[in-house]
Every structure is written in C-alpha cells, then in structure tokens.
Amino acid sequence: MSAPIPKQSLWSEIADTLAAELARGAYRPGERLPSEAELARRFGVNRHTLRRALARLTAEGKLFPRRGAGVFVADHAMTDYPLGRRVRFSQAVSAAGQTPTRCFSRIETRGADADEAQNLALPPGTPVHVVEGVSLADTTPLAAFRSVFPAGRFPGLPARLGETGSITLALQAEGLTDYTRAQTRIVAKVAGAALAARLMLAEGAPVLRTRAVNVDGTGQPVEYGTTWFAGDRVALTVAP
Amino acid sequence: MSAPIPKQSLWSEIADTLAAELARGAYRPGERLPSEAELARRFGVNRHTLRRALARLTAEGKLFPRRGAGVFVADHAMTDYPLGRRVRFSQAVSAAGQTPTRCFSRIETRGADADEAQNLALPPGTPVHVVEGVSLADTTPLAAFRSVFPAGRFPGLPARLGETGSITLALQAEGLTDYTRAQTRIVAKVAGAALAARLMLAEGAPVLRTRAVNVDGTGQPVEYGTTWFAGDRVALTVAP
DNA sequence: CTATATTTGTGCGTATGTATC
DNA sequence: CGATACATACGCACAAATATA
Image 1 (spheres, each protein chain N blue to C red):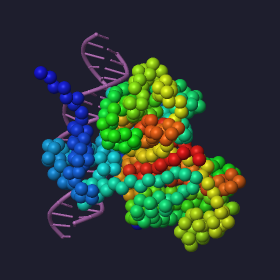
Image 2 (image 1 turned 45 degrees about the vertical axis):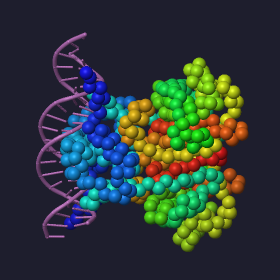
Image 3 (image 1 turned 60 degrees about the horizontal axis):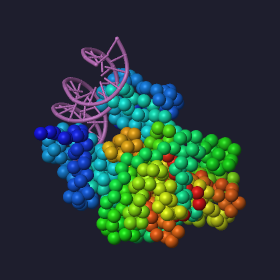
C-alpha cells in the first residue's frame, strides 16, 4: 500500500476545487457564491484558510468580492485590441458589440520629468500637457491611460480635449493631421491599490502595461503614452 | 481639531514604506532583508500583518522569499524581446549580453484537442507533436513554452529536436525552410503553482502569455505556440 | 554527518472594523 | 436600526526548508 498524495497546502487544494467548479459552470457569471463562513464550513477549514483560496481565484480574475455583499463570479468578456500603426480604441470596442466611452480624470500642464523628456526628445522641465483617464466598454473599465504632449507645440490642447472629448480630434484641431506609433513596449504587472481602483479590479490582478511614442510625419515625437489594460478583459493582438 | 488621515490598512502602509526603502536602494539586490519577526517588531505589528505587506512586494517582483533562508531583494534584469515576423529568442538574449539556453521538458505525440485543431486547421484528434520547455538567459528562466505541430507533416520532428536542440533547425531538417508568424494575442495572467515553479517565480507573479500561429509560405499553419513570459524579466517590443 | 537553532509557510482561534442589505 | 458579510489585525502553534555549530 501507499499514500501517493503530493500533499499540497489545504488552501491550494480548495482553490483548485473551486476553480474546477467555476470552470464547470456550477455558478453563473454574476451569481453570488455562498458566504465565506458557509464555504469554510463546507470544506471543514478555518475562514482564513478559505479566504486564501478565494484570494487566488480573485487575483486570477475569476471572482469579485464586494465588502458587505458577498463574493461574486466575474463576468468575462474579452475584448481584442489590435496594436497597429494607429490606435483605434473605439473601433475595437465597437467591433465587440459594445459602446466605447472615454473619460478624462485629470488634465494638467507641468514640467517634463526625466523619462518624459527623453521619450519626447525635449530638455527636462519643458512644459508638457499630461492627460489621464479611463477607457470603458459599456460600463466596464478596460484601460487606464496617461498621455504626455509637448505643450509648446499644442498650446490649446487642454481646451480642445474638453470640447471634443477625443485625443485624436483634439490633436487635429491643433493642426496635427497624422501621426503613427513608433515602438511599443509591453510588460505585465500586478495592479497596486490606485490602479486597481481606477480599473475596478482586485489588488494583485494582472495588468498589461504598454508604453508607446507617437511621431508625426517627420519623425518628431508628439505623444508619449502609457496604457494599463485589465489583463483579464483585454487581449492585445499583433498582426505583422 | 481633525484627523485628516486617510487611514489605509496597516499592511498597505508598511508595504509602501518598504517599497520606498527598496526604491531608495536601502538594500542591495540579492541582499537578505531582516527576518519577518524582526520587521514585525520594527513596525510594531503582528507577523501576519507584515507578511501581507511582503506578499504584495513579492507579487510585484521586488522581493523573493526562500523558505528557511529569508527574504531577498530580487535582482532585476529586463530583457527586451522583439515581436516580429520571425522569432529570435537567441538573438534577443545575446543582445542583452547573456547566454541563451533552451531546455525541453516534454516531447509527446497525441491527438489534437479542439483548440489546437482549430488553430492548426486540422480535424480534431489528428496526431500532433507537443513540445514543452523553458527558455533561459544564463540561469534565469525567461519563458515557458508549449508548441504544437502537425505530426503528419513533420514525422521525424521529435527525433530532430533531440539531435539539434532547436525548433528552427529541427523544422529545417524536416523540410520547412521558412515560416512566419501570422498573428499574436497577448494577455496578462498571474502565475499559478505549476507555472510559478517552471519559471522560478512566486505564485501570483504577473505573466505575459502570447499565443501565435506560424504559417509556411503558402499560409498553411505549421506551429501553434503558447509562451508564458515572466512579467518582470521580459518586455515585449512591437515595432511597426 | 548529526543535532539544533533559525526562518518561512500553513492553519486555527478570536476580535473588531466597515460596507451592504 | 439590526443582521449579514467581507476586511483587517492580533495571538498561538506547528510544519518544512535552510543554515549553522
């Protein structure tokens, strides 16, 4: 006889069990799970042990806890986001049959820091417009962004942004007819508290961060943009 | 009077404090931190509270705990990985001044599942070769991969892989002179237990997963590959 | 090589805070 | 308002891996 049990940790086994039940469709998306206390009783463990299992499923984007309300099954709708020469957020969301929205949370003008200055090919401290906001599909945040523009070249940009609600249109109004993406760097991060709040994600959820410099027809940098995509709601696609 | 303190959670404040000290360079990469017990005393909190702070820094890839030994400062060397028409892992690692290694952990032939069949444009159940392994820079795992090939077209592939140790060379030996990447989908995930072990990462660490289909000159799929990159060791770059 | 101390990982119990219903 | 449910924090104990004498 033998006991060939690998002996994982308890919370890990429970997480696997629950993940399998979720994959099987035992709970519908949006549905509430039994309370932590009930689940702890069911598995015969302490509530802390069960919470650790839930924490992993939450980080994987499968569950969504709401304090005071319960733990809910996340509703997954993956949006494909093509990463081409031009950025077309609206098209990507529309193609998925959803309504694109863009919301600016901060627009300010200040001196460029070292990183921004380098990427925009400006001396440090040169005035730049900084635009922050969130992109939504219907009511779900897909991405948070921060874009930096040389203020000297686009003096009226902040005003235009308020009027048009679109970066592309605002740049056109400032005389920039065409611009393209020079290079993009993509890294994976986990959401900290601030980012998690902006994207309505759990802390520790995976995030795709892209950094790109857009240039005009002469190769002059006109925008240095960073975008954080919710890892379990967006898939970036690259076509050659 | 007033208490204008936002009153974050204790563990969150501690995590921020430690993150600032790490960013300041208070501990060198590879150095051991004070033990959890000592740090807990320093901040005047329970060990669990401190551990939660460490957990976040670990998930962010800043720390690396070794059971029985201590908690260490992670040594970060970001490798840029260009995502072009052709895959050149060796070149990317060499360009960073490191030695590329590839190690195959499993080579088997079996029937294609639904997903594999669809991406290779084959009927489900058609025999395919499945190759799994890890790519390293020096001794650090950068990526884990799984590639699926139509077995009918490359009957001798498993043997060739053992001989050459290279997928590109093995395909050449099987008569495929040239192939290109059709499309790539990129998503962010968190590492589960199995993946964390293969990449020598902490569970919950962020991971970039790419899925790509490679086609020959006629557009026929010849490889369906999935790669998991360690999120804090690799940056994918996309050039237009 | 063995024994012992140290250090991280897991698990239980209890209590309290805070948001929701 | 009270009841419910998740979030945080403390304390204790032991297991497992490592380091050290």
